[in-house]
Image (cartoon, rainbow, N blue to C red):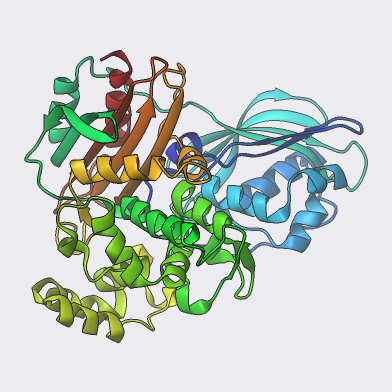
Length: 464
């Protein structure tokens, strides 16, 4: 659900907002994303103020720092702040999605930091958050009033790395176990079957967070294959199925429409909760429940009845949290009755700021074994396009050394939990699945460390 740090999000997922233009030329780059809640709003101006020592470039950089802090801009503000070439290259919705994800969606305060390069109308400067995260911003502005932004490229200032990466799978497993209760497994995939290569932990079901969305994708793909839906069908955003962050669709107005494929892409690549709940409603809760068994889950009863993302959040926080103990003790019928009781809870009712500790992380969650995760990834891969494309948008951690021909990924997290799952294909044609989860029921874990350790396991698999 929640992602660890904005810097990690900027590096690991893929929403980079970029357009670098000279006189009459425009280059656009799109790279990726996944936290959120919005706060105060500051309106933009057509011409930046230049009082005191502030230059037009300084004013635009300051405006952008404020926009990062808010995690949002209005469409009129966006149009007033960027040149027509930029607006043509980067649609408003794409820009806002990247801004929200890279900036932390209002959860962080950003400021203009150290300049690496500076001229009258261009600069390379570090944007620094109050949490210590940093983005490198390449900005160009017009050289005449109203000094609109003509080019903007954002990059992670320093990609996060492990100072002492593990050199063996056993070492990685030991270090993950030092963070909390952990499970880790590597499987080789041969003829559609998962054969264990390495296993650490008990092999019992583990909390998987947003990785349950793989089963939503499976149910959706099955509905398309049956002719009940099409990838280009339009889905309107509704208040009934609006959820909390992570994601971008929670910020869309009711009535805004997106294709089934677009929503599926945001669900997997952005771990979009609002998109997930809309897709569950579209295919039917019972169809996702059936997909648990159809896609090889050993004990589907652990996730039946299915909670959507708002159900889980409501049981952990806010007005429904008093029902949490009843949920834990109830049978399937009792839990379905609880879901009916909490069905009208809205994201505005959830005090997200109080989610600063693990809450029922081992009892109110989605659960699966590492073998379950292997089977669902393998089955989804067999669907081919567009499912494989959807799974490959976000690689989880960068493959900087290009170890793999293809990477398919879905992770999950909340306070106290990190779960990560990959299906990778090596240049020699061998395919492997890496699956793991680490959690602590009492305190948050070092999610950055956990993520990088899981990523190190994935990279070690390249040399098995």
